[in-house]
Image 1 (tube, rainbow, N blue to C red):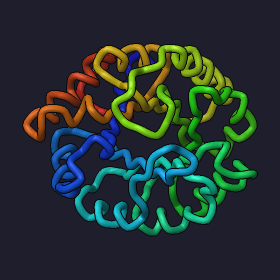
Image 2 (cartoon, helix red, strand yellow; image 1 turned 30 degrees about the vertical axis):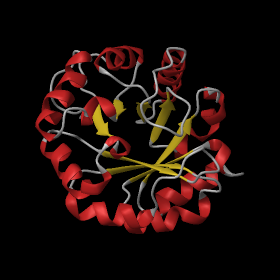
Image 3 (cartoon, rainbow, N blue to C red; image 1 turned 60 degrees about the horizontal axis):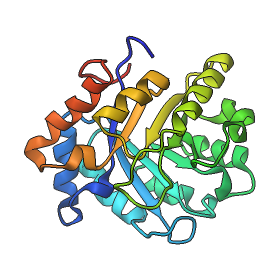
Length: 230
């Protein structure tokens, strides 16, 4: 990843939900490249967050892509609703449906970028045969369901393995990491091969006046400057 600058995708899970539109505008103004939206159903993960109506409400407030992570099962019945709400990237877990290839193809047919999410215990081989249908791979460096967890260093080897798979396939797939991303762990992720970083607390701590510095700190930790990967 030498010479490339990481995409920063702040997770609204760490924002002030009472001021969601304002928070979304503030992180975009502070230099965020994407806005990460965590969708949880209370079944696939032990928490409930938001649905397509909230995505629809956020959409007019920002021009950057909405990076929507579906932690729901089954995911297939809800793809159209999230795309219609304004999702630009829709990411699903292999465990969230019986036919991952079909799901990814459907996401693309709807006009969104298709992502696959790997839980800490999910092996890279789970997606080896769907790389042609994937635009993004998201590595969870915590067990999904809650914000504010500590980074699992065991996932660095997985990031390296996925980077090798992507490079060997010659595919233009964005490798993203989510969970416990801080200035310190951001550097480790980028060095392992990540191109995009999801960060919640590390971006939203300190209020709107701190967002630009927080985002710059994440990029600077990767040693890769102040703009997103091109």
